Structure formats: structure tokens, C-alpha cells
Amino acid sequence: MRRTILLALALASAVGCVTGGRLRQNAQVVRADIDKAKRSGAVRCAPKELALAEANVEFAEEENRYGHATRAKEHLDAAEKSVKKALDLSKTCGPTQVIIGKKAPEPEEPKKAVLIEKTDRDGDGVPDLEDACPDRPGKPEFKGCPDTDGDGIPDNEDACPNDPGPKETQGCPIAKDSDGDGIPDDIDRCPLDPEDLDGFQDEDGCPDPDNDGDGIVDKVDACPNTPGPIENRGCPVLDRDGDGVPDNEDKCPDVAGPKENGGCPDADRDGDGIPDRLDKCPDQFGPPPDGCPKKYTLLEVKKEKIEIKQQVHFASAKFRVLPDSFALLNQVGQVLNDFPKMRVSIEGHTDNVGKEVMNMRLSQRRAEAVRDYLVAKGISPDRLEAVGYGPTKPIASNKTVKGKAKNRRTEFRIVSRD
Image 1 (cartoon, rainbow, N blue to C red):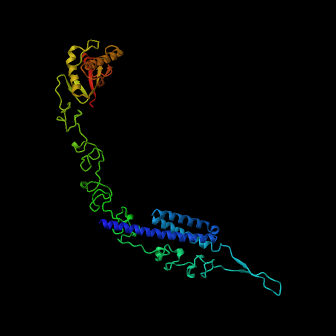
Image 2 (cartoon, rainbow, N blue to C red; image 1 turned 180 degrees about the horizontal axis):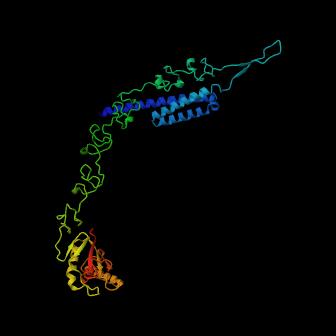
Image 3 (cartoon, rainbow, N blue to C red; image 1 turned 30 degrees about the horizontal axis):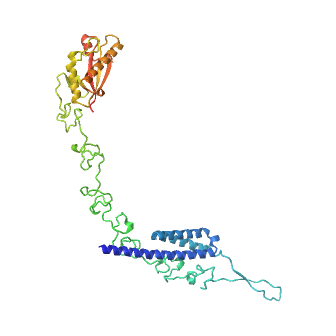
């Protein structure tokens, strides 16, 4: 196999050299025609065509030097077309050669005779004014141009004047196609192996059995142009929600969730911050690690607040917490320790007895007193806020003693659990 590959590479290199040499010869022929056009007056009569011919032959030589045979040939074809047109336009443009004959003796008044002599520089019998190749002898049927390779196409129209070929290929030999893939050997990188023509790099002439290079041959690859693992039939593994769980394994492919939950987001029915899959009591609010509620004698932890079963007592018209409320506040502190990320708003309320400004101030000081108590028990002050609402949020009528007692209260609202 290695010998075969080396032989193919050597053959391709040799063919490339032959093609490059032929293109250089064609370029020389075109340059000769350009010089002839200049002598015929194309600079004056066909300046545009002459300039196009010169530019394209230079481009062709440059492309040929870099091994771009196809592009070089395209420029040569354009140069030949332009120089041919320049030659045609300049046929009647060159200086007319005039020979003035000697005076002939006339019996009467002598007259000047003007003779116009047609020149034929290459001596092929075709006058220069009619000769498309005035400096190279040729055949009359080819307007004075030669046909070096005898293929019936004059050299000035023949892309390969030294190698016979049909008119369909502009006088060049029909390129050989050893592997029959429609790509000539001179530009086929794999002249002995046919291109698979599947729309992927078909122009190089080499077969591509695994377009995407994923190790799965195209015949069995469900995504032949996009790499993917064999377990996904050669297609890439998608993860639309970016949760690290492939779509083909993700029960919720459009919503991110942990792998343990099948790629679906965790549910938390009781809102205690512990996902249901880890919560042993998913319908009851409870602290980590199991999510089951703890038994508190003086309060109950709900989703939105710590509901106390008795009121925090203060000295009358003052903000000092009375000792009979210490046990209750100690349990509030225990809740905050059980839920280490919970933040709570301590909210003080009063009845409507007295001035509202005084009641607002009193409720604020009482809320702050409760916060100070909890901080003294080791709760971070960042987790506690104190707000006094005075008489602005009653929960009962202030017209009765019982209603006023209910309105004089302290509440613990849960701000967040995370």
C-alpha cells in the first residue's frame, strides 16, 4: 500500500510538471502574439484588448509558478482571447507602406505614379495586412498562422500548440482520468482512487470515507459531517439546557436540573430549601439534613414565618424583654441555628393607645430589643432586621381589651431561607 501511495504521488508530481511546462510554452506564444499586435498598431487601435492580454498572461505565469494550473489556464485563455481581438482590430491600423515609382516618360505632361506594395515579412504568401502571424510562416487557411502540432487548430488559437488535441479542449490533449471520477489526473490528488462525490471536498479527487473524522465511516454515520460518539450513531451529543445531562438522557432537556433527578429541576413542595429527592418529609417544612420538622413547644416554623404560640412580653410602656419570654426567644434562636441560612424580620406592633409617634418609636425599640437578645445568643446580626410598625397594622379591633392585647405583638417573618 505504501509503495502504491508513493507511486501515485510521484505520478501526480510528474503530471503536474508536464502541465506547468505546457502552460509556460503557451504563455510564450501569447507574448509573441502580443508583440505582433503592438507592431501592428494595437497600442493605438486596441489599447484595452492589448492591456487585458498583457495583464492576464502575467497572472497566468504567476499562478503557474505557484502550481495553480487551473487558474493559470483560465488567465491564459483570457489572454489569448484578448490578443486575438487586438490583432483583428489592428489589421487596418498599421502604417501603409507606399512605394513611389519612378517617373515614366510620357509624351504628354508627366504624372506621378503611386504604387502600394503589400509586404510579407515571414514569406508565407499571406500579406502582412492579412496575416494573423506576420512573423511566423503559416498556412493561408489559418490566416498565415502555423499549426505546429497538426491538429487543425492554428497556433494562435491553440492552447497546446505542440500537443495535438480536439477543438473542444482548445487544442489540448484530452486529460487522462485513471480512476474515472471525472477529475483529470493532472489535478487529481488521488488519480488511482476515485472521489466518493458526496459533497464533501469532492474537488481534490480523493475519497473521504469519514468526513467528520469521528472514527465512524460515513455509510453508518447518521451525522457524517458532524463528529459524534458511536453510541449516538456518530451525531454530536446535545445538552440544550447546559445542565451536564445529555438530551438523550435528560427527562427535562429544556430545563436545567441535576443528573440525580434525571436532568429535571429539583422540586421543593414544602419550601424548606431541601429538594424533595433528599427531603424525608417533602410535604412538611423542616430543617436540614432530612427536611423533617422539629418539635418546638412554643412555636411552629411555617413557610412564611416563625409562628410563636405566646407573645413576647415587655415591661409596660417600655422595651425591656421580661424574663418569662426568654424560653420563647431561646426557641426562636434554636430555629435560626437549625436553618443556618434563614434571614428573619423582627416586626414590632402596638395598639392605638397614646400618640402614634410614640407607639412607632416604642415598637421599633421593642423589635430591636428582641434582635439584641438573639444576637447575644450567637445569631449573626446580618440575619436579623428589626422594624417597628406601631399601630399601623392591627389584626384585631382596638375597641376592646382583647383586641388591643392581640395588636400588641411581636412577629418573626421569614425573609429568605437561602
